[in-house]
Amino acid sequence: MTSVDFESGARAAGAVAFAIELDRGGQIRFTGALEAFGLQRATFDWSGFCDRLGPADHARLDAALGGDRLDLRIRLIGETGSVAYVRLLGRRVTEQRFEGLMTPAGLSGEGALRIREEHALANAVAAGEVIAWYQPIIALATGRLAGFEALARWERPGVGVLAPQDFLAMADDLDLLDRISTEVRASAIADLSLWRTVCEGGSELFVAANATVSELVSPSFPDALLEAVRQAQLPAGAFKLEIAETEIMRDPDLAAGVMARLSAGGIALALDDFGTGYSSLARLEMLPFDVVKIDRYFVRAMAANESAGTVVQSVIQLARHFGMKIVAEGIESAESGDGLRAMGCDFGQGYRYAGALAPDQALLAVRHGLEGRFLPPA
Image (cartoon, rainbow, N blue to C red):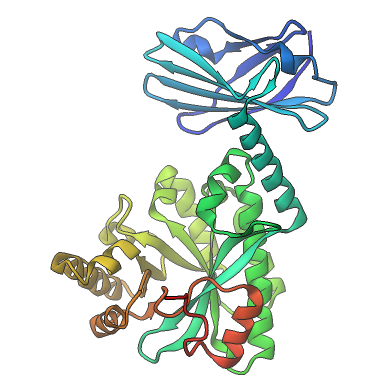
């Protein structure tokens, strides 16, 4: 019997405990919390992979529990870098099936591609290829650069620059989101400190970056972020943390405690993608937000949909009532920018001004202004 250590985490309902046994015959046995779903034991024959297991091998286990559904994903990582992936699905505790991306004869085409991509991403994060790019945020009243939102980009050799939608879902599967998030924030804080120090007019700039769900409920997260901002000698409000509604709702009480500590330490908090989650602005009065970001869906819909404009106007009025600043995302035309400015929106970002800029381009924007230099091709 091969001894395999594993990590476990529940992504939905509470903690779960599983036992995994592998033998040289290729049997992978799951026991433990499966009984809660009426499954006494599940096995899968994967002798082709088990033959290559060594003493340094380990397995990663993720379990998502919801209602009567069990979604169990097992990742087996060999000491030589070989990876196998198996998934058990149970519905109403009566059905179960396995999907393997590996066969005794070797990797299948789809599985081989997935594993190559996972290795490439893990290596890219370790090598510093996933970095912060910066989308300008404009003060609508003046049309001048006010700050940036830091966004993750994978500068992949031989491929090009990949946007978050091209790799963040895989990063989540590999448990790399927190590391990427931390490094993007660290770069944003360091770059903002540089801009504010060496660039004329840079002392008024701010930068915004995101936190992951797990960071938002981590007791150690506020101290780490506050220390990073302190080391960079940034004043209160210069760094803004963007938090999506859906992230708050994962654990509202824990999130509220973390947010209170961040706010008390001088971190400005921005409610990201407002209008796509569960909350109302009235409820958000209880949370220490300084900024509301209007989701790009409503901004883009304003041109063709009068009701979307009414929604945006209402959000702006309510946010102002609560003393919050407003940022509109997804501005793509002069008309949208002018309309939002007339409504009293404070800031805007979108392709009307610039897309995400590489760090050297962002420095040029700080020194010389945007002035149409970084507009995407027509």
